[in-house]
Length: 128
Image: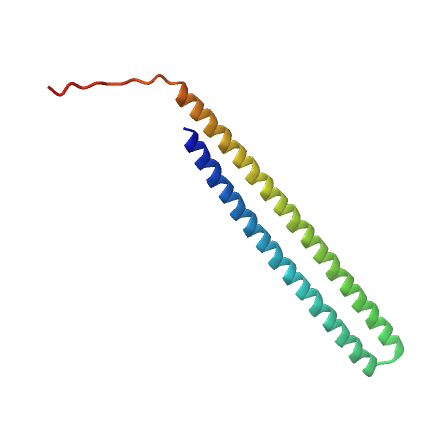
C-alpha cells in the first residue's frame, strides 16, 4: 500500500511540474508579445513625431507629442494590467494544483489506511 501512495505522490508531482512549466512558458510568451507591442508602439510614435516635425509648425508638433505621450502611457498601463492579470492567474493555478495534490494525497492515505484495517480472509481450496 505504501507503494501506491508513493506512485500517486510521484505522478501528482510530475503533473504539478508539467503544469508549472506550461504556465511559465505561457507567461514568458505573453511578456515577449507585450514587449514587442510596446517597442512597435514606441517606434511608430517616433516615426509620427518625425513626420510631424518635418511637415508641421511648432504648435502641431507639441499637440502630436502630447498625443504620442498619451498613447505610450495608455500602452504601458495596459501592459502592466495584463502582466498583473497573468501573475494572478498563475498564482490561482498554482494554488488550485496544490489543493488538488493535497486532496489526492489525503484521499489515498485514508483509502490505504482503511484497506489496511480490513481483516484478511484466506480461502483454502482442497483440490482432491
